[in-house]
Image (tube, one colour):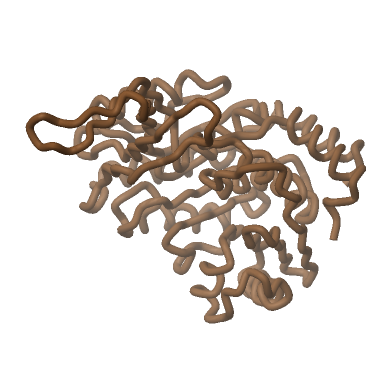
Length: 349
């Protein structure tokens, strides 16, 4: 991608309208000072003293964070939170982001707020060390009235937006936002708005999803197609992605960790963009969501599959070098890394 093309695509971001429908959670970081460790008089166990608590939107919220960092014009979160303290914190964080409209975000006493609580040791001069996470989730089906409101939100937004992202983060089907009822609405959108880029990612795999743009890792692709999951065998992954893209008539994007990313098109074209070289310690948390956000923004701006891959690869490289947080990448950061990568001939295969 030339610098001129980079500027053309990213120059369109401020005018884009994108909806993110999915499982918004609160990432709550408990920063622990190991130098203040005590021993409990009652139990004899170590006591880890929390010296700072910080929260930010996670899961689908991480995608939203990245879209905000890219400077997109208007963003619509479609999801829910509980009527609880974590929900108040999550909703406040979402509403405080520039360009975010909360018209289709539901607060309900029938759900608890999906929360990832992350104790993390912070010491000067050392990389952060994350301890065992404490999760709060919903384990019962999403109530029908909530599901209906979410589905109506997606259908209402479709004529107004330039792209829709679906993020299914829950472990148990139909307990989150991307339920069967919401997917039925998305299926209707595919027919009614064939030019609308709809990008889907699910930690449980995309089996049963409508024919939208798929984003997945190699293991998820293998589970869906019955093929190999060797991320180092880019040729086999590329062929499996191409077969899938042809069968459902939409592009397929596959992440290969340190081996880069693959994009396959229904017309038979496919591309492999290698990962950029490491520049120090890394933390891969949030990298996949950064890829999803940058693919969606690029496609909404009119990028080709190859161009979307290149922009997403830049973002992933930036995010993994942000330690102890779920990071984001701005257009300025993307431009700087793109310039250095082109000069070093690292970006193209």
